[in-house]
Length: 356
Image (cartoon, rainbow, N blue to C red; front, side, top):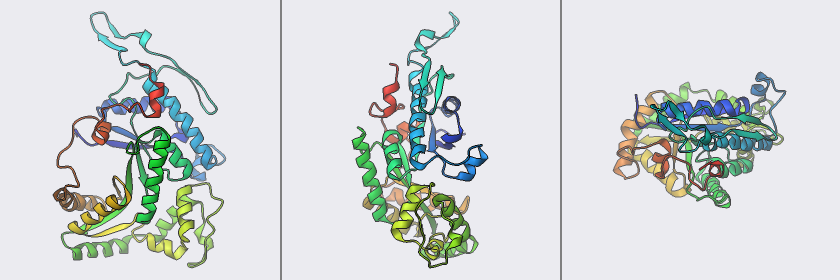
């Protein structure tokens, strides 16, 4: 049904075996002709761990240690199991692939053991475009090695600028280019044909939104039971094992329960950008110019209304400013994002596992 849209699928690697996940993403990349991406998550909920048969989550940093090895297994399967010239498709000789050019993967690690061939011929991208959302110190080291796109949720421009700058430095330290990762900031956009219309929509959305639900979600993200605190009591953010970057941000700003409820006026923790199309376009451009982010991850405030408003009103305003494309590029999702072809570049960690 589509030619140009990319499809990003969030999969928690803690509860998926790498061998099966590799096959599934290869299949998706074939079906989309190279337009699939994977949003890598490691989990942060003890309730999810218990539901999957574990006693509790692994410690925060160990989750990333495990994820590093998981990605190594996947690179061996996606990038190294089949040579580029393995597939012959020789109908006359009844030979699909040369078995001498298909290599068995034998991995014996701390967390995973795999002994077998990747069950899919290489897809257009081989490895899906890799998305990730960790902004903690350990999460950024993981991103610097593996990620191609990173989601962040900064409360201010200064916080965004620091996060982006630190990530670019980590990329260089990992032997990659500072622009090898696209950074996308979460944002809730409420717009209308006039500023007054946008403000009216924002007020209506607030009437229907649940701030308490937003706080409950943030409680899961930080591991903090906010029900133990009064509206203006100082909150102890220490000792959690959930999303470290969310906990650190809240602690640095001294967010009380009252402040958090104000932040979650639309039910989510993304900052709200409210105004007519021109005002929103200018605000988005200022975030890019002043923080170094590459784009935005738009929240689903009201579906499909919020997206339709953005497409119909804000996109033309951005195009008028030369800040948004007016046509789609051809090629895979990776090529659309980076204009360097379908495959991961040689600078990426996956390149070390290729059988050329």
